[in-house]
Amino acid sequence: MNWLAFGATACGSVVLTEILRDSYHALCHHIPALERWHNYHHAAYRRDLSMVSLAAFRRSQLYHDMTESIILLVALLSIALLTGALGVWVGVVYAGLFVAGATRRYVWAVTDTDYNHQPGPLQEPPAAWWVNRTYHWRHHFDNVHAYYSGVFPLVDKVLGTGLSLRGKKVGVTGAGGALGQALCAELQRAGAQVTALTTHPEHFTAPSQMRVVSWHIGQEAELLPLLATLDILVINHGVNVYGRRDFAAIDTALLVNTLSVLKLMELFMHTVTGPEAKATKELWINTSEAEVSPAFSPLYELSKRLIGHLVTLKRLDNVCVMRKLILGPFKSKLNPYGVMSPQWVAKGIVALAKRDFRNIIITVNPLTYILFPLKELAVSLYYRCFSRGERPY
Ligand SMILES: NC(=O)c1ccc[n+]([C@@H]2O[C@H](COP(=O)([O-])OP(=O)(O)OC[C@H]3O[C@@H](n4cnc5c(N)ncnc54)[C@H](OP(=O)(O)O)[C@@H]3O)[C@@H](O)[C@H]2O)c1
Image (cartoon, rainbow, N blue to C red; front, top):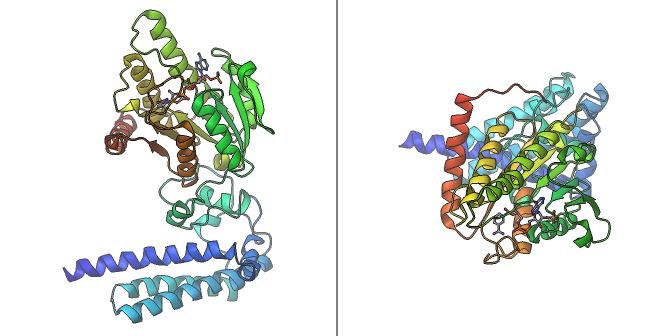
């Protein structure tokens, strides 16, 4: 039991060290006196994370890494002495190792650096559960006022800095619909440059500074040049054929809710090229909670479940970040009985995306919060075992 308590306190103290480090990091970007010193760290790296010069690297070790790790060491020492908990000394040793590493790099000009600052092209998208190189690259070169976390993305989840939308070029399909309009407005409020993709531009009154692009089902390929310029594509268009089961209804549901979504996903994934695209390109797909709950419209459920499964399958290729929007009933033309407002749902989507949620669940049905993650995990594991990727992108 004592060993258990020791183990838990030891792990807790390591996590606490990282939380303190990330909180200090966030402060460095808000308090000018700290920022001046922290900027030596930013000045030490080029866009491919190679070092600007040995002198710049050593300066960054002195003014940033050593300062930060000494503050952490003092904080952990104080906690260990105040609480008397033996496990916290593991945190003290952990923080001490960073002081030693930074001192070694500064005094002996050793140029080994941590995994977040290894030079070279970005090979994979930002990881969801821990901070990888691509995740951290965004802090240096996408927005220095976001992506503060260094190992566990907890602080970014709390602060809403896990995804910066500032200046991001975002395209939204189904922009003329209830959620489409609300989402375009919310994304614009978050600082994104929004392109509204609509099949009825004549009905779309765009707010100022919003670009409107007309498109049609079956002509997805014509959007390729536009998709190449976008950072984020939100595939939001959808149709509900309600209780119908005739062939025309099957055709419409599959064409609109499944096949056109799949085509747009494929086209967009082909635009994830170049050294930095892995860091910034994202797909958001509105699949609906009909993936796991009844929508009292069999063809709607079938088409949404199919695209939901296909997204799960394509996620395994790890081409870019793919967020699923798992939404409950909100009021719109598609669902006049919805209980939530599209504006509220749009606010929730953006708030959770900024916290880097990959499955954005917004619903009044508590079962979805339990059933969806279980289903997603099980299906993803099954697909991982029985499919293989050819990485054509
Ligand atoms: N309302 C709900 O309760 C609910 C719940 C979960 C998920 N969702 C999903 O949320 C998304 C937005 O739906 P909404 O509720 O906001 O409905 P909506 O107001 O009816 O908007 C749907 C939009 O999709 C586009 N669309 C419809 N038919 C199309 C077609 N044949 N080809 C191309 N685009 C077409 C249209 O946008 P343009 O005219 O601009 O092209 C339309 O305005 C849909 O994917 C829906 O399945 C809705």
